[in-house]
Length: 202
Length: 222
Image (cartoon, rainbow over all chains, first blue to last red; front, side, top):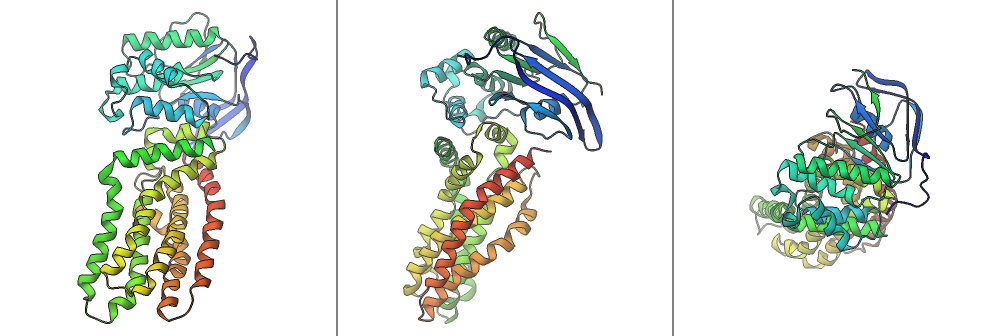
């Protein structure tokens, strides 16, 4: 599923000398972030330490004050907002998402992704009728069909039950075994062997 | 052209799902026009004379009221982030969104305008021109309104600010739109204002999507 040209230990994203100020607060200064294929980088830090902002900078949604970021052409960003329209069903939202990249994904693959996150019986229900955890699961379906080498996950464990949390861990393990890398802002121990940790101060 | 179609279909589907909200602009158009009939009176000489101007002003308000929601919900639910990250080129996705929006705001107004014109006792000879100017002018209103909506997407309810931003830019469209109808009323030809409207449409369709894309990128910077 992943691009064949991804070699082990090849940097997926390289950011150097990043500085960022939000509302007069210096969040990080001269920060270097590199993720190689197969890496899981955990971002730790108290609330307001700039974990989300760093992820948004790396994704290219937020501009840094200084620094250089070399990012892959396509990356997957899972933020605090669900990215799901409440009038559309999880399946329709997923179809729109794959269409954004003009990627031809078969409806079978889409249904499989929805089934994998446990929303098969809700696949035609509008997202406004789903619970907070189910909405999170519907967002996770994007990971199931992703072919992006780099995943940026912002507190992905939020409002997930044990099953969904286990699924997320499996997805990340599969992703790294296929040469993908992830950066994960988190407050809970993800429990992966050999992760690297970047700690941001308040 | 793929992401143009994808975005267009998605937004049209959302509009169809939210029937009441989608019907709002059209209902406003009909209600506001009928109030003018009551206020001015049908048998007067005034109503036929002011009719084109009134239809155009109301069409402009419909455009402005409906633009506010153009990017607001996508900003709130995070779809906008995904669009900015994955839509390449971004302007095609933006155009798809705007076309879907025009189909449920500007197009129904243009379609209903002959009926509205009869309703407010407008002279029959201007009806073709009125529909023509609305078909050319309302897409311009959508495109210009899109710039304002993109600039205010992250500001919560940016209603008044949006009005202040886009109103001055709407004025040329209003002048040429109703001006064409008055040319016909005065027995002249309306080619001049119609050509101006076409020029405005060509200009805004090429430039506005880029401005909107840039403004949407800015909306992510908190």
